Image 1 (tube, rainbow, N blue to C red):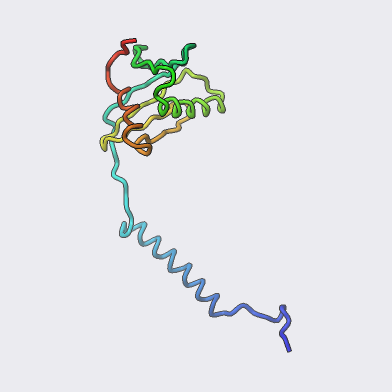
Image 2 (image 1 turned 180 degrees about the vertical axis):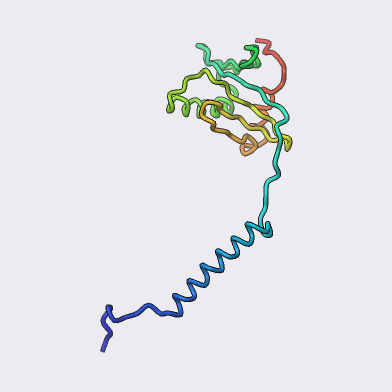
Length: 152
């Protein structure tokens, strides 16, 4: 003879075991959080160098990079070159268009004390950590921190 489903009970031992496991997990997480044991923390990095930049497309396909404070031309990215810089800036510009913010606010390029680089859109507060894309791609932005004028 079979027992109808309405008369079956969930095993108390399994329920007690699951409850104990959840309680122990919460206790371990809380202990780790407050004691610091078993956790890792990224060291706090300080700003070493920043530069506010503007990127402007030219009719010939080039991109003019200028210092937002002095309006001095920092570099001119020739058509068909600097694909990584163009791709990152295209993504940031797309976010601005989505939020209808315009092109006036500058982008903030920052070198941190742990030698990382990031670029932040001060209008949308979107920040991209450039070391994630490798040293060559990060270097494409690093050269824009230098105080040189474009010779073009």
